[in-house]
Length: 414
Image 1: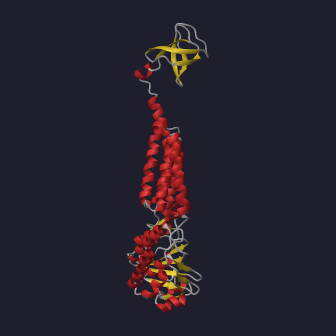
Image 2: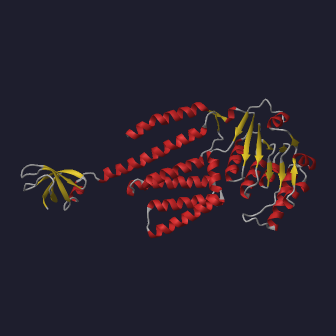
């Protein structure tokens, strides 16, 4: 319990900081939420944007500052769906010198308002597979999807379709002229002013820890590596079975399924949590510490993937808070697994008459001299026991247990 007592002040401080530093979102009815997207459109950005749009109120104005060379189809579809079904007004802004190619073009066309800055460009939305091949059926399907998004938002359908079928690109001025963009502004400040939102509080949103983790594991290269490592570990387990190796193989397999799109983030997180908790429980019966450590790590990863920041405004460095909290969780879970293991050892070594009978025939070492009529001490099965004998047995000599008298062992020399 000493370890738990030393951790209590840390937990108390973290809880106090969190209560002091968090302000409910509902307290701010009118505000501008600026989501910064700079990079590949993947599961991390899809998760981040979808979560923020799900919790945005009708009185909020969401501006997605978009700069991307493209991304993957499923995350793009999820982002477009979230934008179309958002309760708040959603504006996509392509900043000066920015670009919204491929996946970015679909996201831009789906917005309520598409704003572009001088020096920005949108287009080149022809779908290709990982090898760079083009499937005419996929091109036709995506072209009509782009056209339907343009029709939904009252934009130029032909110009939108051309970004897919002809890889057409538009500068800010061209996009405004052909009816793709709605407004051209110099920067985000002018955009907010033109929208009449200058007096609204502004919240800037970037990738949080959960989104970073999802982006990492959704990388096809990482997913492929994890899948191959999992397969290798399974082969090793078939030759030399170990609980830790099997646990690692299953966990990597689950994470690779996440990266390949077969499992969602929440399903993966819950699965890893269950595996981690199971490993800690199993540790109390059969482990020597490895399963508790592995279980704690899996539990931490699961918690990271379940973590959501959209319900609060973080007025301090929330990454530091999350990492500190996770460290505490890992320590607590690790200590808990260790203590449960020790409790099991104590329980298994309980001194009932039936347990003592099992010591008959066991070998031991004399720790305190035994004489006829005088009780000595012997070490048997890692425990010290009172012992008697019909002969003199000196310290250090080996004995064997030949009987039990109450809770005193009867021994003789080997």
